[in-house]
Length: 152
Image (tube, rainbow, N blue to C red):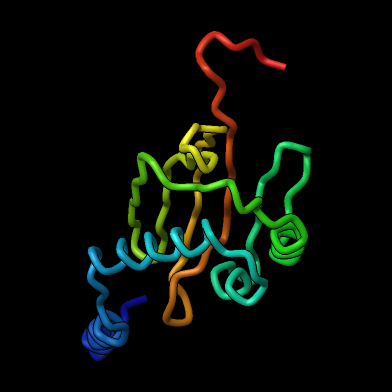
């Protein structure tokens, strides 16, 4: 069956309209926004901040055969605050963007007041841009073992 003569131009106009209906974002600003959220998340201790950063469908993969929901993650973080003498910072932070999805890989180094490294974890966080902002939808960490250390 042949499409009506007006079909092609109408489809073209609709596609053109969709392309311009959503304001284009600057990838460098998206990276900056995601890195700022990661920094805020790393040091967040209150439910309000965590609630804003984590999407409603957030999942945190933990090594006890469980997937933490947003609320479970917030409860855990607020009930188990980081000790005052433990300091964390990022290392090897990398952000890759795929349209409305940002994937962050990096490591977190924890140290004591004297600067001695206590532990290091590698992580992957996934962010999605929706509703005019970036939010985390997935997180997973892996403890880094020194080379040659036996597996448990």
